[in-house]
Image (cartoon, rainbow, N blue to C red; front, top):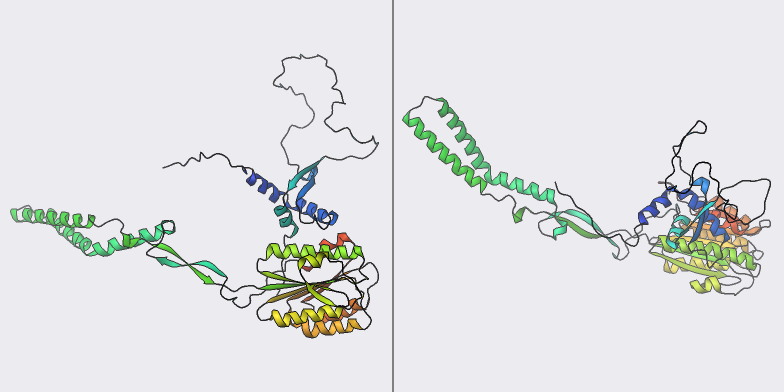
Length: 428
């Protein structure tokens, strides 16, 4: 038996394992704290890590201890100054370990809270846990550029780290059996004949025959032992090949209303929603494209910087954005090759007579080609004609069209999770 002793020095991140164990153990509490932090942060700070606070009552652990009552004697180590009955001064500051801040009260109770820091990676892990693009399906091969390594049996050549020991020993054993099979059978026959002669009466002829048999058996066994235990021919290596796999190509259309009816507060909430969506997409899907479309009376495809920070505004014609989305899908993203998703944010205000055109465009040009369409209306007032027309669209496409209302900033994250919650297997 051999022992391996690891004498390497501890790495700088030696507490990483303990930290991951802590995060897994209190996942529910940390997740709730992260959700609360999202609602309180500004747009620029939404993706940063930070402090997470958990009440002490949630991290307490059961302990075994003596019950109250009875007579007990204790010996405390380190006491060299005091004897039983000695008196000493009360520590200044009240003798407590608290901060001393706050005012006295005749009611209420509580516990200190446990606060620790999580980094950006951990923050986003908890933020987007359990979310996915719904109805993601496999499309065509994308120029055979996406491949993965798969096992493809065994080969007789390869690098030492790919050596398959069990297969190699099995091949060596089979080779020895095959090459020595005839000799082994002959040895068994000669031994049976030798045993018969040993039981027979002793005479010069039998004695001579026994000596010949022993010599022949020894020669055959020596020949068998000369066979090598393992040969280069016996070595088997794991064979790995790269094969093309179906690429889940996806594109997300982000459509935002920037008309004059969208106040700065509504625009900030719309941006928060799209920032969450953009972080979610870029973090979880490496091969996804994002198309940004802003609209007032006219729609325009813009880049990320202009989409989130441009101050352009105007009237409201929602159909212009839907028409542009349909044109981009037709020209650049054929439905047979791409998984297409659309997310639209608006305050619901639209030019009279245009809402019916929006419904027609969605039903005829957009929804037949998309996997999922999510519409959020940011308003505290009654729903307008656009919402009513979209309700008719949802009745026609209940599986692929979803709509929710956002009234205040605290509604953004819950609505976002409802729209992109992970569906059960087979739901699509």
